[in-house]
Image (tube, rainbow, N blue to C red):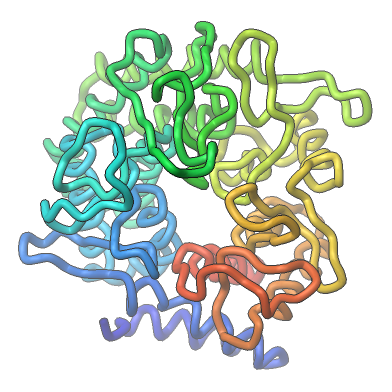
Length: 421
């Protein structure tokens, strides 16, 4: 799609601010419109379908993150605001179709990543249940409303999707009562759930269960802490929408009550005393004393806590956690001759992600750290003019996913944040 004037104006402002860094300015000019020009489809019903890039399906998570950097331009561009609202409406309808699915087809054509053992729908590309898949649509709808005053997308479909989400999260507080299971055969262990597709056992904590991480890798333990943090924030957004847009105090109270329960579970079960870093947040727990101490490049992550709005960047436990995950104590922190940062078990060892680098910059209060990350991102695009999923810390010419729009979007958001735009 041809870029609108509002986007071109953003590119011109950034280019002017980066006149002394023409290569970085050119990188931004490529990455900023990438989602709009290559992954967005406006459908006949007025909704929007946003593929992730080189995969012809729409993830609830990725599609939301891919357009977030357009919200400032949408303040002055009604057509752009309508496009984002169309995505919100499409997401609401898909959540109602199957709230356990993470990725969907544009139409009910039966296309899918694999023929998995789970409840099937011709609309669903993949049915890996991830808590954050239901957080992102709430966040996007709320941020669009706050950025533009636009509220037409906060309609009956959105309300029904929100109520579906609330009900599911309550069911998954006690996963033993859940109807969900997922199994994939002839695959790595990270691509399927053990225990006949139910996942490893968990105890009640107040948190809500997740089968998979934002990377689409299986959780080692069912309470994925950063995703539960995101749920706490998203429920706060939902309560505000219910109260101010729908004038429904009962629904607002229900959202706030669930938010408090999940948050109490995080505080009681997800903080671990580390011998070197002090109290830190675990990445996962089962509520029975087992923890995964790490961070993953995908968002939500522990690194992204201030970006999500769960805690301030100066929060002591966050600062301890940040020091941990940006050190070699985190098994997915890599340092090489070309770069250093957080990678993922989803990609090869010693591959780090531009998404994590951009998030490190967005959550840093240190000007020198932010500048160093920007330099690193500029120097590791392998001459392609775009960001990638992951790249080798010793040789950025070795990378995964040449066309991965989310990485381009969050890089653009970081550049604008760095420039104070």
